[in-house]
Image 1: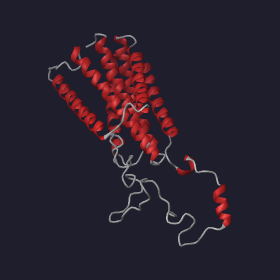
Image 2 (image 1 turned 60 degrees about the horizontal axis):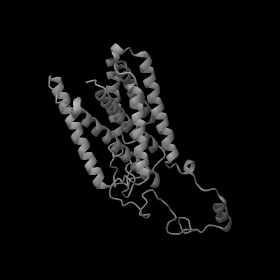
Image 3 (image 1 turned 135 degrees about the vertical axis):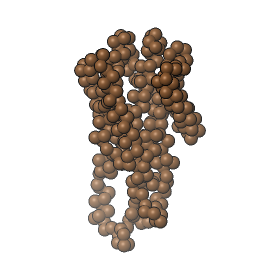
Image 4 (image 1 turned 30 degrees about the vertical axis):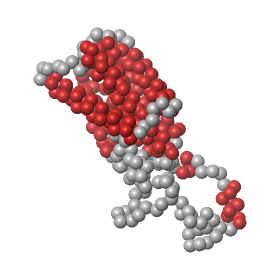
Length: 295
């Protein structure tokens, strides 16, 4: 089953098909060897647990050495672990926060629009990372730095108008993340095909609606999607969609670990989590601004 998360749906992402997309794929016309339901199982001695290719048997000494050898860990197998994901996510978010702090102290409030360049560059790099077959940690960290710079400048500008809004948005984002994680781990949220289809459909409609509103605003019209009672509803929907993306991230990370995804895929997982958290933070900023009376 190919990944349902837009970030993980590229080649080289998590999948439960007969092979790991982009990793160990068989040439056209050749059938992949079947080693049960695990697409990462690649045991050349599957036919004979005590044999070698060519029918040569292992000696008693070799069997004893194999028995006494330590169990293969993540460092030996090169497979992704939860610790890998946590470490890479921490590095990515730390880069984002440090860049945000630089923007907060360096960019003047009256010139915060300058950070729009960083936002545009972050969007381009984000698209490259999403569609790139191989994982590039440098690109992911660059995205985090540019996105963090933009968020830092934007947060400072809004905080000047509404004191404390940045802290409120951070706390709100952390609360949403914790709530979704607890609900997912407790089994209250199950990522099923139907759940995914409904969520993705709503997300597509939301994005189209916001693009239409953006174009209308450029021509002087405003449908009120970002102000008043309707704006509050739209803001809540936006945060709910961010929470939905987090559940897809958690599910894909869980599947990647279960099926032995390569260790480097932990960077892709970190990137997906960062995208979802940035989405929630931006929607949280908008919602709080509306609730506190800023149009």
